[in-house]
Length: 100
Image (cartoon, rainbow, N blue to C red):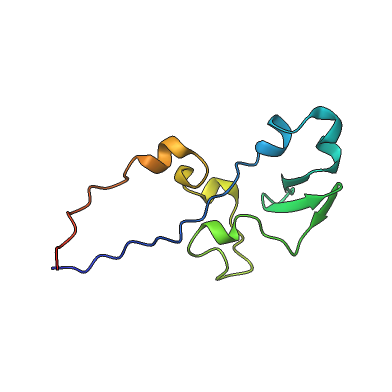
């Protein structure tokens, strides 16, 4: 029987639209936001300045910090990281836990 591990350290990531869709319009220019550069990479932008040392999706995917030339974007994040409905839906059937 294969041993199964349940990772309880599930990262929750805000969807990138949260800063534009849920912050009052008068405050949006001052919020931290995720922006995509012309090369298709997502970065944190603070006060309109893109911070290329902050990779916002890196902590939300297992391989996110492995290769600085392969920076993950929000497209790489499983919807369960930011959508409660998707998080509650199992991706694959799980076997019952074994009793000790």
